[in-house]
Image (cartoon, rainbow, N blue to C red; front, side):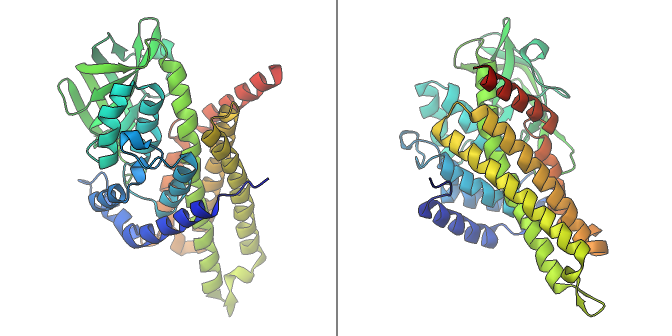
Length: 371
């Protein structure tokens, strides 16, 4: 049995890497980081739209490429390596997947084609502050046509044109689609450790909205969206972790101290070896998640949680050890190490902290063992 990507998928990865190496360098990332007026890089985003990557896993009848989730996993890993400062994850992993999961045929045709063309930039609004957004705790409400409440933090919420919102409806919760450029919506940018992946506070005051799926089934849809997005985020983290290992290895070979490369020192060798092991463990879990995602397997909740946890640990560790390997230089603004550390810390808590995903993994294993 072959657990690796196909030759076509590897070719896609190679072409995506070439493109991003040329069109999305750390200089582009720093442009966003150093300019408080920027929430993302317009030039990079426009090129990503032109490449058609947003429609990778969107069916052809809705204007997408109709490839599949494995191909999207491949692209996600390359986007993670490049630290792409664009709303790709919010639009593709969350917004589009929510529409695919819960949207009606009419809603899909109306919105997904605009997503692929770049006319619609999406975000996913579930959080209302610290804690897991359970239906019993939601304060944002939907009365069948109007949305009221506040969501914070919302990734890319300041630049998105549309949002899928988890809101309380009756005794349960529903997913609703809302036009953020319409009436009853106000937004405020939120400062974070990682400005190249922007966040916002969005307040709805009777904003017109339409339900996705059936009333009261929002929690089930929400969990499904999170499981699917978790695998894709894990591939982004994996890409970043591998790039950190490459940076540390290159520096260890090139940096001389006392007449020899610092990579010859046992302490540095151990750092690099530990990074490699964690990255390989994360890759194994990500491949498990990719299989479950692409086949819509019953093991997806378990696979999503395991891939998310392993990738979060690997990326945080690799970004930290990359700084340490670079020594005093690694802590400076001029060296790119901190860019990966920032992204590692942010992605570790996006769509739920490691604690949340540990609880999800335990619950999934308990259900599996009870069956």
